[in-house]
Structure formats: structure tokens, C-alpha cells
Length: 397
Ligand SMILES: Cc1ncc(COP(=O)(O)O)c(C=O)c1O
Image 1 (cartoon, rainbow, N blue to C red):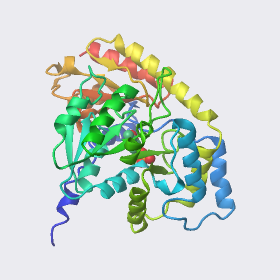
Image 2: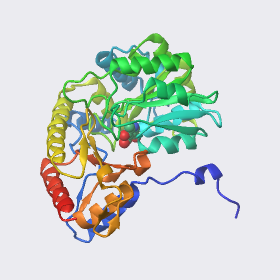
Image 3: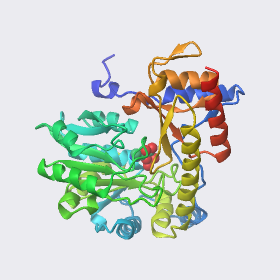
Image 4: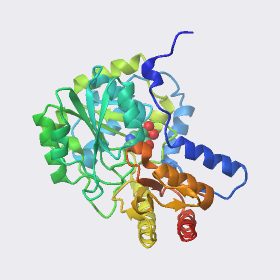
């Protein structure tokens, strides 16, 4: 048989899968393991949102919808962006699809010609790298440092630009670092993007999960010139505990949205009508419950950070947002734990699961091989137990 597509075959399965598979296998065998790898809120979807989905079924809202999303949903998204960040988009400048991931894929397909470069600050969310490749682009990874709060500096950005650079992916708040960019920093980054004529994909999926009263600044809100070159990506998944409903959206200039919509019309097509009705309630209805979830994440973040700070051999990176926290392993690199030489986060995560009975995400595939990611979208009880186990694991090593 003829060979499969070279491009498709170059796509790697998620590197987090290996640990996850092992974790699930151990649990199925009845072993008492605890997982901190989840990328979704542990709360149920708020009741008023679920009811909107139920009503949609009962009212026979079960037919095809327009490719870019129902007008009612796009109006609700428009209102949310206006109220939250003062952004002024028309409904023709908003497109909905089945989650943030497909939106990112179509956004990249819309921007890139084969061989175009996309600047990707590391640590990065694992899927960006593969999505850029899948869209025919070339990821250009720029390492950021813990000392700079994992923020890409304007100088680093300038140095990474070549005649082939088409876009920058900016993920604030960031998965996996939990960091956000300040207004001043974003302005400096934006200036470089305008000067160099770059598009920016601003993934603001976690923008409502910010702690300590910190200011979150939406990238396109900086100026009209910045808004014109930005594709804002967000969705319902993380904010409203709606990961399974599959609703994401982009807001951008009319031409970009039109091309994205054309592309979608022949591929993913319109989004589930029932999920759209529920998301309309999420974006357009009461926002009270999301504050309760945000607050619960903040309390857990405080606990995780404080306790982990006191454990010798590792140190946590205090996240400012999201429900993730990185743990720095540099002191353990080169040491032997339970007969295993720790060369990187994969080695650590494997032995921690086997001997410590705790699953965390090694950030090797996130461009951060000396860090593991703990999700605190798990119960406080499990967080306490997980940290007890970390302490014991390191003390007995
Ligand atoms: C930074 C970031 N962007 C986008 C997504 C995709 O979200 P969705 O589940 O809506 O596809 C995720 C999910 O983990 C994410 O962490």
C-alpha cells in the first residue's frame, strides 16, 4: 500500500498520554494512585446552563445551525467580550466551533502558507506545536525563564523574527505555567508585532481564572492596530466547567472570520445545536457561579504552593491564574531516585507514579523538561494526600 501522508504521520501523540495510560492501568488494578493530570474543572456545569441544554432538546433545537454559530450565541459572546474586556466586535467578527482546539487549528490554517514560521514561547501548551505543523507551518520555539515569570521578552521576540515569520502564539494566562502578562509587558510585545507585521493568536481560554485580584488584560483591547492583527481564541470549556460540551470561539477581523467560516463549512461544519444553546446561557446569563469556582481554585492554589514550598528538593512556581502549578525539579536532575537516574521530567514522573503512587504531567512535551505540572482541579483532600505522598517519596529516596 502507498504511504500515508508525511505531514499527518509527523504528528506526535500527546506526550502526557504515557503517564496517563499507566495511571489508569494501575487504578484499574486496584492500586491506590492519585492523579493530578486533569485539564478540566472538577465542578459540574452550572445548573442554569444544563437547563438551557435540556430546554433546547425539548424545544427541538436539534437541526443544522449556521457554520459560524447561531446568531444568539454570537450575540452572547459579543456581550461577554464587551462587558468583560471592553472589546467591540460585531457578530460577523465572531466564529464558534467545537472547542478551543478546532478553533486554533482553523485559525492557523487561515493564516499559514506552507513553511510560514510561528513563534511559540516555551513552556507552551502541548498541542500548539503539533497544530502549527498540522497547518503546514514551522514552530519556532523561544525559551523563556522562570526568573522572567515565563514571559517572552520583546527582545527575545525581535530576535526570533525572520522574513518567514507570520504569527506569534500568546497564551495568557498560560497552560502550563499559570502565568499572566502585565499590561506594560503586553504593550511592549504588541509594539514589536505591529512593527514586524505579525499576526497574533491570543489564546485567552483561562482569562476568568485569575488570582490575587491581578489585572488580566485581553491582548486585542490594547489598541485598534493590535485588534486588527489578533485572532482572540477562547471558549466555554474552562470558565464554565463545560469541557464536554465542546464550545470554543474566535473573534477577529471580518475577513479572517469569513475565511475561517468558509474553511469550517466544508470540514467540521456547524457546532452541536444543543451545546450552542447551553453556551448561549453560559456567556449571556448569570456569571455568579464562575466566581465561586475561581475562588475555590485560588484557595487550593494557596495550599498547594505553601506546602510544596516547604518540601526540600523541589520548588513550586506560584501560579497567578488557571488551575495548574509547575514544580521545578532542577535540584533532582542527575540524582538517582529509587534506582532511576532522573534526567528529565519524564523520568521523575515515571518513578513518582511507580513509587509515590501520584500521577503528575511531565512538561517535557511542553518545552519545559525540568518541570512537572500539577493540576489543582482536584479535591482539597486529594491535594493534601498528594503532597503527603510527595514528602514521603522524597524523604525515603
Ligand atoms: C491553553 C489552552 N487552549 C485551548 C485549549 C482547548 O480547549 P477546548 O477543550 O475548548 O478544546 C486548552 C485545553 O486544555 C488549553 O489549555
